Length: 91
Image 1 (cartoon, helix red, strand yellow):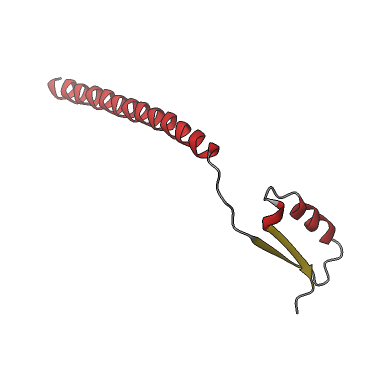
Image 2 (tube, one colour):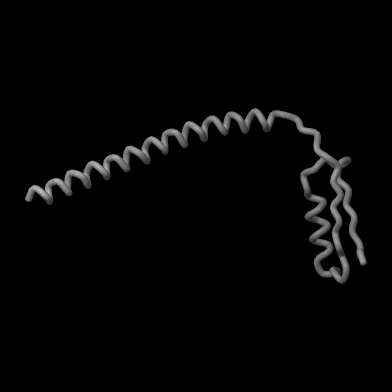
């Protein structure tokens, strides 16, 4: 019986150790999450100068879907003066 009791005791100790281990990581993960949310708010309030960008839309034999593609490009949230769109058949 002594062997079974020892195995049971070691099993209980290991289970509680694993529960504590996961609990500590959960607490540190939550603290890190809160810190990252505060940092995200600071970054969201900053103003960044975006580079100019040109979007090329290849449209060779695309009559069926070119309308949807152009509508999607027009819905982009990018400063209008910084974004250029070009479409056509590039051969």
